Length: 427
Ligand SMILES: [Zn+2]
Image (cartoon, rainbow, N blue to C red; front, side, top):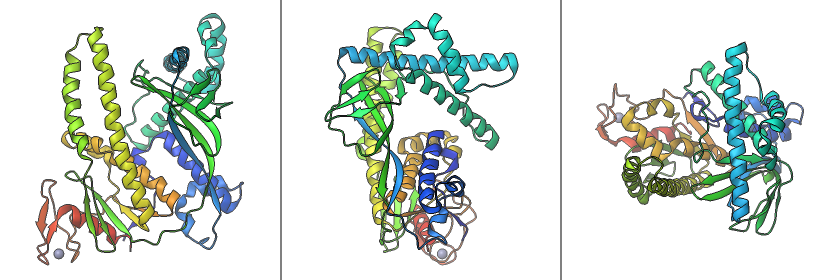
């Protein structure tokens, strides 16, 4: 059976994630092969891990992870936070405009370092207000811009549809990243320039803090701390293997090698909130530009978005953790989500259900908890193959939920049959 082991689907990978994964692999391989050749080995992928060097087992792995907490800023801090977000957004937009201009004049591109130097020169005369904020905020924003361009050009090369970097908007892109002296206290976090800000809960950060990203969601502020931590090497799991088919009527169907086949529903409140969301979005679009009521409804809309996001995330986290902790091997389809999203009707559902996110979670949790993630070949006909006799149908339209095998007469539920076929790949 054609199989390959991948960490994530290249079609849905963000640049951040690639970087994270590279770091994870690099530090992992540093344990395996020593610091020097870690980078090359890392590029060859995690597949090596269970290979020839199977006898070897490190006691721990260095890994980056993030902790996210809600901030409880006072009035002055709120103002300063908004100023930082504003400076980061300004630097990003300024950098983007300059790049476009520079390219039109010279046909060349530039980079974050050069742009940061240029911005620093202009700061004294043109943007003196920038001295009020930490120099990290604009600097990191320019780095993000660099990354957005790299991502865009790589997309062009690989024929993916990655958008050209867009200008950031106030209210939608209120975030900034800081590096340097970041400390965590009992119920507070200390950030460069911003000082000590209270947190709404007790942080439990373990590891060396690398950076802090502060973001606004509706009327709340959050900090996400990226740390480098040593996590113990997981003990391989001895549970059953499973195949997962992602569907439209159910979130997923899981067939396990112990014979169980389970259909998993997306959480119920999600559907209800999504209906409310659609209604509110219509209401919001009728409100007059600049009116007080429009501002209020925008805030309400943002809060609802946050609630939906939280419900979905919680569900995806729980399911992916459960699977990665209990299944020895997990087989998923190499679903071309980007391709499917072009189909209008399906697009809504897929976006709502967060398959891409689910796959990403499975990928890193499999490494954390000692499970193995296999991705079936893109052209493997998991739905059209009879899981009993192996007969392959010519076609099976999406709306057909059940079918009978013409060769052996077995009656199949579409999703359950596909999950069973994926499970077979684990053997
Ligand atoms: Zn059959």
